Image (cartoon, rainbow, N blue to C red):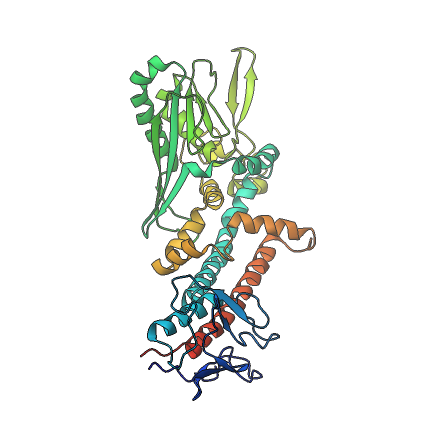
Length: 442
């Protein structure tokens, strides 16, 4: 006959608790003693089993279902303790296993998994807090670059919100970071598609590589030193309608000047032979706005790009001392968002990383495989993205105008870490109870 394990009081409970959540032990009269006195081990024709006294210390600890006095677990028809008649025989091993399973059901998610899930969230916030601190210098430089670009500052939040995140897939390894982007290609003149599609693919890949690819230097320690690249996956389509899981390149002779709006790049047939134009337009897929200014030339009847109002803060500080006018980043740093043709500035790439989830994905990749699986299976819990935290911080700034965003972000992260630690203590107590109250089947 299987004997139930004698229950010991859990040391993890508050010292004021006089007895554990749940106790049951065999008595001579073939009943089992519970917190509420002698009861038959099973109730006749019952469709559930009640854990008598579960959570009886209402002001200290509750069971995970939120019940104040007892927890009822609905059992499947196949469960061996359904409709068990009261007999003079003790429970079988199978029946005790069923009781243990029912207890787990009442207490919620497996305690060990719950603890690992919370520890993963805690580690996520530790790394995120360090990242936010490391990003301050590069964020400040971008703010200084665009301090006079009022239009750009107003446009970028809207542009970022319009990014089709389903067209982006981020892959992180210990040595590199890649963003795969799906792009649907549509030629208005279908006769051109067969002859010019390969030309577009070749030049688009060349332009994207020129703008985006590099080894990350001058970045937060989280990603510093890794290789970064964008991998475009172009697919020819015979439909003008954009697939919502793709960006789109639309080629038409009616396009007089290349532009990218709402995840659609519109170019002329001549543009598909220009890697600089294609690389520049790829920047707009990620919510970045131009710094250059278009001025209409009366002599030529065409618009002309001139350097914008983006100012390199290092040069601006130097020129302020000498009284020399500062040049724009298109001149001083070959900025491709201005009139330059060089690689994307670090300040802008950091902006992209923060807005499409590269930093968060990198933090998650640093967690153990088991922790990652638990987050995928059990959800994000308290985990928040940088964008979500920034939005929450902006809402709080109205109440705390003297605090800067960095201080509010640190306060928000500390709040969430405190909540996780509180839940971690509670989960550890529950797991200890699980070990104390389980039937010993050895």
